[in-house]
Amino acid sequence: MAAQFGRRLRKGAATTAVAAVAVAALSASQAPGVNDHGRQTAADATPSPDASASDGSATGNSPYYTDLPPLKSPNPSPSTGTGPAAPGASEAGIPATVLDAYKKAETALNEAKPGCNLPWQLLAAIGKVESGQARGGRVNADGTTTSPILGPQLDGNGFALIRDTDDGAYDGNSSYDQAVGPMQFIPSTWAWAGRDGNDDGKKDPNNIYDAALAAGHYLCRNNWDLSDQNDLDRAILSYNNSREYLNLVMRWVEYYRKGTHEIPDGTGTLPDNRSDDGAGASTSPSTPNTPNTPDTPAPGGSKPKPSPKPESPGGGSTTPKPPTDPGGTPTTPPSTPPTNTDTVDHLEDAGTAKLTAMAGDAFTKRISTRAETKAGKAVGKVRVRFTIIGSTDTTFTGGENVATVATNSSGVAVAPALQAGEKTGKVTVRATVVGRTVAGLDYTATVTERAADALARTGDAALTCLPGGEFADQVEVKATYKGAVADGVAATATLIKSADDPTAADKGPYFKDADGKAVRTLKALKTDAKGLLKLPKLYADDTTGTFLLRINTAGGATLTVELTVAAAETSSPSPSTSPSASPGA
Image (cartoon, rainbow, N blue to C red; front, side, top):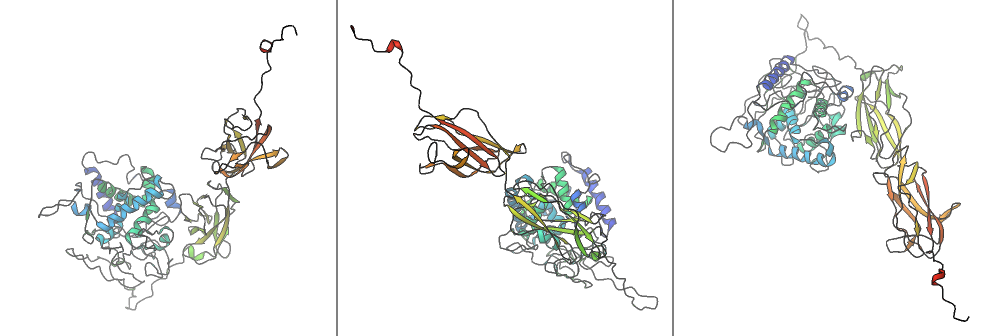
């Protein structure tokens, strides 16, 4: 499961190394035609900058299942005979409700973020290594696991140190966080990544529909396109910043792409091996220093294997006894040293410039926050969470309203760039320290309406009309802002009395409203995606002369267009056609 601050702190390094070697062997033994399709190998893959710079980890580096997919391609459907299932059939089968959740999440993401190109097989692969497909599909009718699926408490003992962030609401642990549910989200990540996938009004990490949809949005942030292998690698590494994890997930993705089928809920097989040498994740909430009850074996399954050595709570074995001195008297275990987070006293602004952007544009400046001790000393390697507060459609780049970034050696955390929505006005972004109760620091960003600073006609033909007729050409203009197309800019068009009097005229050319009545002012106009604005047809009454049409946009761009209404010219009679004088006159 996902790394914290770009490091992998877990037990069983030997097991992981063996798994990595097995992965390499599997790669070499695949049938002809099955290859990496140009993607990076585990040895070549590197953590993404996002994964290294933030806690962008779904699971807090809890253990994951390292079982590899079978060498033989899966059958598209289970065996219908009375004999044993075909090789690979059980591994390829995905419990019905779990498979439905993955496919529904894919459909939802294709609508919400079509540029992400999320395949359900990726969710299935992550679900396989995180929880064995919700522990073999042990879910009820609405998709909620029949018992909690918890990773070990993240107390720094062989894992990342993540102190409680949810007061035990999700994991039952008020001291440290634990990964929760079939997709193994830690509470601090679920707080912003959680989704309601089954439309019951709740965001429950223990529900496979909610968890799968949340995982899909998590993997689709940062404008990643998962049809591009580089972005796919980055997304997987952000879920777990481990090269072995990336390679393992990709093996399962390729396996599921070759075929899978639906099996009844509760009949799936649970993997045997975990990255910490444990026999499986805890299925009930645990508290610090309290042993867990071993999992009940599934029908037809084998009993969990005893761990050869004590594990931390949540790992499936009893808690180690305190050390004793030579006389047999128990000694007090050493206390956990304070973390960098424990030393943070407050947050300070780190020189953030004025935050202003037009609707629809990216902010060019970013928020910078510094974590400091009481004495004003900078604190590095502290997670700072930036949250967009209130009702606004402004987000961080990638579409999320929460981002968590680790401070650098100077104690500074720089938030991702903001992307302005269409709602104008003030937007509040609050910076807080993850795992530490200190006052938050609020920043104000301003979204202004879309604007143009220049308008020009797209044609140069003279605009003329006969009295009582209609103008042959419609007026079309193009709006720009600093030389670039200005789309979605509000505009008005008014037939004015004169260059010095911008009030609407009461005679001369006019537009028609929906009822065919004359109107000389048009409001609520807006330029299109190319910055173009084409006005409706103009008509003339019986008044002749030269008239002015003025177009104004948000941002102050103005253009005045001249209109001419004149009677048709009459030709003077030629001498040859003049009446002849009467003879003798």
